Structures are given as C-alpha cells and as structure tokens.
Image 1: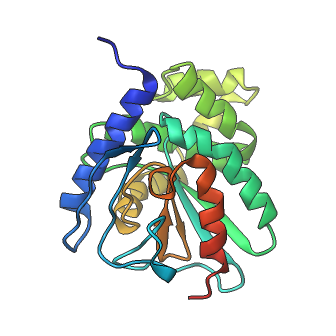
Image 2: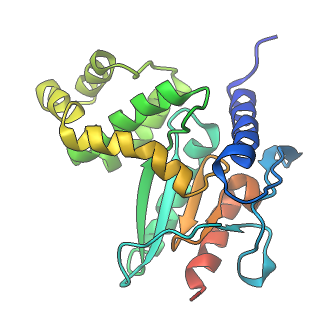
Length: 236
C-alpha cells in the first residue's frame, strides 16, 4: 500500500522523536509519537516551561540570543514537511503582529545522521542561496509548493538552478550564491544548530533560546501562535 504524503511526514516525525530522545539530548528523555488530533505528540525533556505548561518544553541547554532589544524566535523547518508548510502562513501572520518586539529567524532543518539528511542539506543550501539573493521571503511559499506539493527534485545545483530560473531569477547569480563560501558555511552549520536547539519535531520554534514548541506539542498548527504569544510575553 502506498502511504500518503501526510503519513510519510508523520512517520518521519516519529522516527525523529525517537532518535532525538536517544541521541541528541544530554539528559534522560522520554519521547513518543502518539496520535493526537492527527498530529504526533511529544513528551519533551525533563523540566518545564513557565506555569508548567505541556505545550512547550524548556531546553536542557539554553542558547544565547543575538540581541536584548527584541525577543528572539528561531524556526526550524523543512521544505518537504507537511506541518512546516502548514505553519508558514500562520507564522508569517504572527511575526507581522510582533514585528516591533520579536525577531524571527529561520533555520532549515538538517537532522545529522537522519534518513533524509542528504535532501535536507540540499534544501538548506537552496534556502541559504535564496536568502543570500534577498528573495527567500518572496519565494518561501513557492519553494514549499515545489518541493512538498509538486514533488520537484531540487537536491542538485543544476535542478535548483533550473527551478530558480523558472522563478525569474538570474541563473548565473543563483549559481554564484549557491556555491558561495557564505552558503557553504551556513549549510555546514545547520546540523549543529539542529542538535544545539534540541529539535524534537518539525517544525519547531524556539523562543528566547529557552523554550521550544511545535504543532505536536502545541496541539496543532493553529495552536502554535498562541503558545508563542505566551512565551514571548514571559520575561524569564
């Protein structure tokens, strides 16, 4: 029987949760994929976020934030992830509401040693090339659509360049960005960020380097922005 894209996404998340619990975190962790409203449910690392909420978890090793002027939010996503695509529009609306007090940063997820690492590295390189050209915001939804909905293979330089050309980009400039030392460095750094931020599901949003949430933890894609509101409002 052929599985649906949603089923494949849930299976990938379940495997990710199991792997994270045994390999990425540095404290004993119980992680399980349990059906809940059509989403995987994760029991995160020991410790809790403010008010003991179960909709987000405290990072075992908090990460530094780049600025004290605004709250920091970091999204980990993958172009071939159902829930990452579904969160894109709500997260954009949330970021617009918090434009004055929150800096949203995006990191393409690369699970080191995971079954999709090669594709994730290629998609990370594509993201960073688009970011370097200053067009990633304009083309983010189109990239999700191409990879996840249309199953377009964008995992090589030639395939990614041809697609970029179809989006109206200059192919020579795209190739130069794709091969640039800056994009090399960002792509190579992505797996370490995935580990440092203790990502337990995709997508994941980490607020202020301390608390992480996602559709599985929050109870659905639409529940992520309200949880982020609470985390941003917390002054811890």
